[in-house]
Length: 468
Image (cartoon, rainbow, N blue to C red; front, side):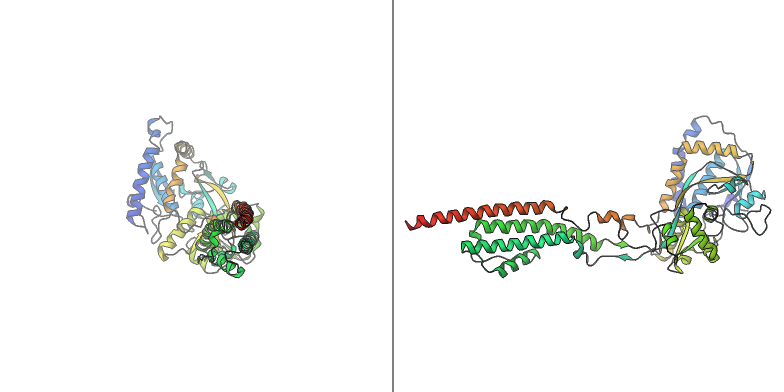
């Protein structure tokens, strides 16, 4: 039993907890002030309640840091007790620090954890929340939902995979071929103009070296008065314009491919766990996730739980260091509450100063969470009525926002996954992406041909006139 007059935040700094508490107080009374202005038919409890919890700061467990679930419990209980006018004392489950499950060793309807305390009349209510299953409805009263939580998969933090050979994949094969043919055609056109007009550079290899040098950013020039030919200048201008556009496109794509990290997870979804027999799915023993997978009729959940039943070591106690267990084998993954996973990853990051685990972007399942009271409790209707009013005033949104301050810096955006379909749309660049510059290149070549014909005509006319 915990004395509520001396609750402290074990395992966390006073600054973080106090700042969060002050922020919560400000937002709370602004968001819920309407409940004090509008008359409410809720009756007060006016009693002393025994409250079950297994998270700090309420549980006051030695050496256990505060996580986001414990913080939400603390604020929610403070809100309920003040509005419904009740005092409380905290009781921590003596066996497992979880909501619990049927106790197969004792039988006769016995339960472990918090639900066991409710069944045995050791507590009046649980402030530790969780999803409501049919088996729980049979033994306790379940409140209205208060917050959403997801089942997520925690995996080892993947290594960054940067593409050092990105320049080879900046364009697709058709684009590379078209570029080579276009610039080769430009070189040959300059050579043909010089041969026909008998002025300018007439060495094809020199022209090819010039075009290649300019393409690679090395510069260069063509000697022997090539500037006197309008056709030659137009061809060179068309080539340089095309090079300018292609170079900017190339630099942007290559820079993105080389500098933007890509991540490759061992799995990406719960379906991958089933398909890969080497993956070892770990679940916290007697947690809500354990109960959900054990009782589920969903085929994928059943397949995962069969693997766990075949290897009981995959059920770990709630006192475990989850990230250390995860990293003990490269094929390990942990299936757990997203709220708890985020706190564990953040705690591990503060300890090691490096991301060692992350949560897959694709969740397994989303679920609503409720509070639990004794079966046919006289307080159920009162608490439900208040929770409904608080929900109308924004309780769910508020609780969602409270744990944003704990958001893990180790999360990986789905767009950064290696081979992500959203990245394939613009990388590599295709002929369709660069169709504009190649059309311009073709139009300028046509103009060059017209200028070339005009120069030939003018040259033919000037020759007879000069002889007269």
